[in-house]
Length: 464
Ligand code: PHE
Image (cartoon, rainbow, N blue to C red; front, side):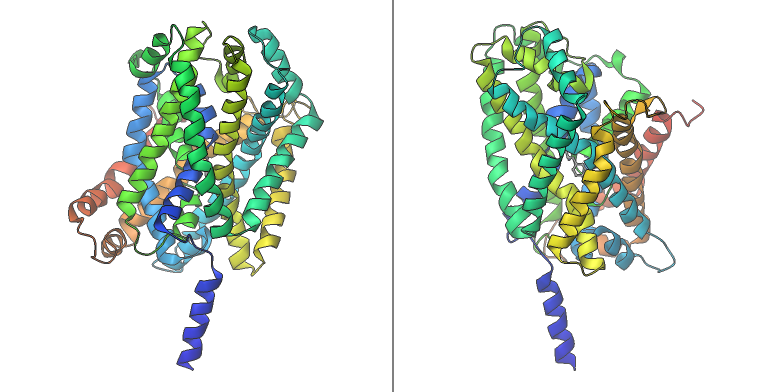
C-alpha cells in the first residue's frame, strides 16, 4: 500500500518537467527576463523619459522591488512544484484564503502581454526579411516611417507575422521544459550576447557617439514625474517577468539545491547588462546621426532603420540587430505561454502538446485584436488608447505591480518566516543568514510600500 503511494509520487514528479541543470535553470530564467523589454521597451522609454535619470529610477526599482519579487516567486514555485495557480492554492495557509487569484490574474496578464508582444515580435521578424532586401533602409525618417505604417496598417501582413511567431513558440514549447525551453535558451542567450557586442562596437566607434553615452549616463532629474516613476516600476516588473506567475512556473522547474538569492541576483544583473548594452547599441548611433531619442514605441522601427541607413554597411548591421531582437523575444515568449500551458497540462491532465496548441491558438485569436489595432480595429479606443496600447498599459502598470504586491504580501506576512528561511538557505545548508534577515525586512515592508505608493500615485489615486 505504502509502496504504491510512493511509486505514484515518484511517477507524478517524473512526469512533471524540470530543468536538467542549475546552469540550465539560470539560462532559461534569464531567457525569460531578456526580451523585447530590453531591446524595444527599455530604449524607447529611456529615450522618451530623458535618459540617465530614468535609468537610475529603473535600477532602484529592480533592486528594491524586482529582485525581492523574483526571489519570492522562484521559492514558491520550487516549494510547490506546480503551475502558478496550483502553487498559490497549495501553499495558502488556509483553503479559505483565495491566493490562487494571483495565479489567475497572471494567466490573464500572460494573454494580454502575448497579444501585443507577439505583434511586436512579428514586426521584428518582418524587419529581418525587409532589411535583408533593403526595402526599409533610408536616411530619411519620413520614408522609414512610411515603410513602418505600410506594415502596421496592413491587416494581412500584421496577422501573418504575428501568427508565424506564435507557430515558432508553439513548436518549441511542445518539446517540453528541458528539451524545449532549456535547450533553446541555452543556444539563444550566447548568440544574443555576440550579436549585441558586434552592434555595440559599431555604434560606439561612430564619430559623435559621445552624446549618446552622455544621454545614458548623465542624469537630469527635472524630467522625472510620478507617471515616469510608475513607468520605471512597471518596466522592472515587465523586464524581470514578475508579478504574473512566470517566475513561479519557472521556479517549479528549478533544481532543489540551487542557491535562490545568488541565482536570481545573477539573472537580474545579467538582464540589466543586456539593457545597457542595448542602450549602447542604439543611443550613440541615434545621436551620432542627429536623430531624436524620444520617438516612443516606434523608435526601433522608424528611427533605428534611418540610423543604420546612415552608416556604411548599415543593412548588414540592421539585419543583425533585428535578428538579435528576435532571438531575445523568443525566450521571453516561451516563458509567457508556459504559464497557461503548465496550468492546462496539470489541472486538466491535458497532454503538453494539446495544452500548447490550444493556448497558442487562443492567443492568436485574442492577439489578433492587438495586431489589427492599427488597421481594422483602429477605431476601438478605451481611455484614449487603442487595444495594443491598452493591453500594454493594463498589464505593465496595473496587473504586474498588483500581482507582485500580493506575492510579497503573501511571502512576507502569510507564508511564515521559517518557510522563507528554509527556502532561501536550502534547509540550512547555505550559510546566508544576513541575506535572509535583510530579505525578510525588505519583503515585509520596503517592497510592498514602494509598490503601493508608486502605483497609487502613478495612477493619480492619491490626493497629493
Ligand atoms: N521579460 C520579458 C521582456 O523583457 C517580457 C515578459 C514579461 C516575459 C512577463 C514573461 C513575463 O521582454
